[in-house]
Image (cartoon, rainbow, N blue to C red; front, side, top):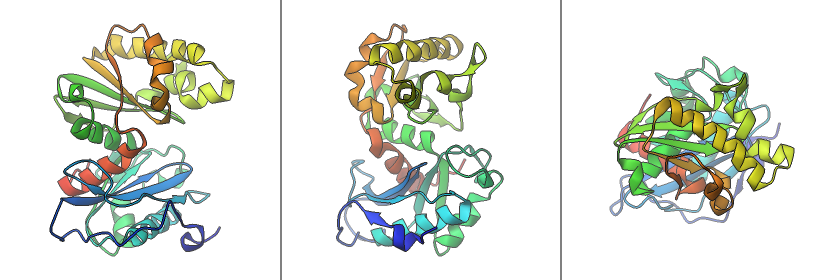
Length: 273
C-alpha cells in the first residue's frame, strides 16, 4: 500500500488556510471519509461555503482504521489547519466508538475513533459522527428552509441509502433506514443509486423503486418532508417528479459538499454522538 504522502492528490493547489484563531469568518475543517475517497476542506461556518479548495485523497485499500487515520492526517496537513477537526464516517457512532462499518474495513467495528484520530492529529480536539448525519446537519443549517420545521427525513442515495432524522432542526443520530427490510430485502438493495447503475435502470425504472421505499418510510414515520441528497440529486429533475409518495420530496442543495460542511459544524459545536 502506498503511503498517504505518495497517494495524496489535491483537487488544485491551495494557498495556506487561515488558522482557527485568525480574525474574520468563523472557520472549521471537515473531513468526509468515503469508500473511494477521503475529502476535506476549510469551511466558512457563517455561510456553509468552502474557504479553501477541496483536498481529496484516495481511500486506502484495505480501509483499516490506522490507514484511514494516516490519510485523514494528511488531508489536514495539506489544508494547513491547526484547529479542531470534524470527521464524518460511514458508520454508526456511539460515544465516539464505531459500531458498524460500511464501505470501510470491518476492523473499524469497536474502534474508539476519537482515540484513533486524536492520536493521528496531534491531540487536537476531534468530533466524529455518521456521514449521513453530518450531511443532514449541513442541509438544515444552509440548505432548504423546510429542513428546519417539523419532522424531516434526510436521505442520501449512493452506494447505499444513508438517513438522518430531524425534529424542528434537532438531530436524532445514527438512524439506518437503508437497512430496513421491505419483503425481506434491504431498502438500499432495492433503491440505492448503486443499484440503478448495477442493473442499468432508467430513471423511470429506478424512481419506481425509490417510490416503494419512500412509501414505506412515510407509512412508518410520517415525516413532513423528505430531503434527498447524494450525487444523484444533481439530476433530481429526472426522477423526483416521477415519485408518487404523498409527502414533499425536496432535492438537497449542498449535494457533495454536505458531509464536509456538516463535519466542520460538528467540530465547532462539539457534536459527539
